[in-house]
Length: 252
Ligand SMILES: Nc1ncnc2c1ncn2[C@@H]1O[C@H](COP(=O)(O)OP(=O)(O)OP(=O)(O)O)[C@@H](O)[C@H]1O
Ligand SMILES: [Mg+2]
Image 1: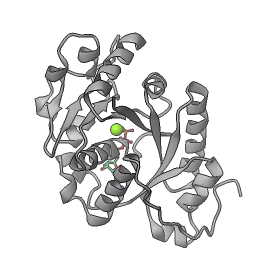
Image 2: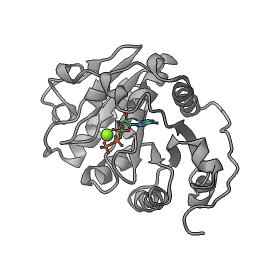
Image 3: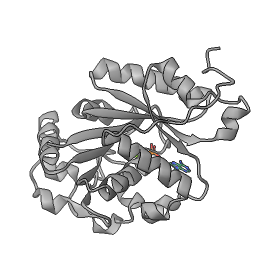
Image 4: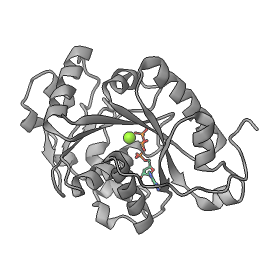
């Protein structure tokens, strides 16, 4: 039996889709079978991030409503046992029970189901997050993003009792060492969320990921950070770098 890992954030544009795609590639490279499931109903993007938008016929809602078989709804991706199940292009009348049963079937077939969940204020987030075994909550450098992450974490705790891990995306060492933003480990301690990954900002990947790039084609630092995160999710202990916190999160 595999597990569902949901990827979400306090607000949009924080790298959920890019992380879902790249983490899936890293896990598949390590020999795991992986399904990338797009939970952004009505606003799908994962297919494009993976460069397979022309191959989508059936989607997650069709599969959960049993309008097609699992194999019909899965799109095979390059690089190991890696598949995509796209989101429907429109909002769907899928019931919670159908959603739960569909995801349960995916868990039986795959080692990992990575669920690209929309930002926390979207109604689908509330329906999808309780289905996951673990939740990766993405934050960005800066006070407003940190505060949104605190709010998102509180909402998740209201909805379900699942382990939530912090991921710092768009990380810039220069911003931390100049004291303009708090260090990721300081934010992790303040929010009481274990830090699971620090993903550097890379202008080479900004938007370019949406050309369906393979992880091998990512800049080295970004690729290493994704591989390390995949190894942590596989249960390995890989220590994270700590940064000198010249500044605490926003309240102080
Ligand atoms: N570490 C990074 N370095 C540089 N660019 C990044 C990084 N992570 C994500 N991006 C870029 O930021 C943009 C937003 O990323 P993405 O679409 O994955 O965010 P999202 O959280 O899924 O957005 P939405 O809420 O709209 O679904 C994309 O152009 C993506 O390539
Ligand atoms: Mg997205």
